[in-house]
Amino acid sequence: MGSRKMNVDAAIKEGQNSFSVGLVLRDDKGQYIAGKTRHFSGSVQVVEPETISILEGMLWLEDLPTGPIIIECDSLLNVNAINKICLNFLELGHLVQHCKNIINSREGVLLVFARKHANKVAHLLAKYPCELKSFVINLSPPSCLLETLLSDALMI
Image (cartoon, rainbow, N blue to C red; front, side, top):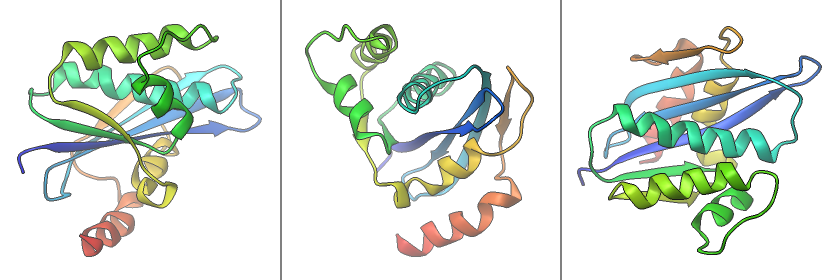
């Protein structure tokens, strides 16, 4: 009760040297509050965009009211890397550490793993078109999300 949930995901644009992240914020009843899409340039492996989607979600928290929030991601590798106490010296270590710092500095933030079927809305939003190196905030859900949001609501 009183908490919010943010689903995060990434989509790589094959052959376009770019990727996008999708973030969906919902209330404690599962109702859509807002969504955010951000498009990045660069050729990457799957793990990096997923890490960036988590970091983008955590950075978005700075613009949102405080309070308990659960961030769900379908990359178990990233969720485990960020939630572990040990230091990470891999290529993405600086991104992982940035996420850890945000979690440690803000009370009530919990990062958890969600299976792909429970993360469909964020994945669809990650595929939503936006200009390169820009972001779009949707205060009402784009039409491409309506069916999936309705399906999610029926499951609650």
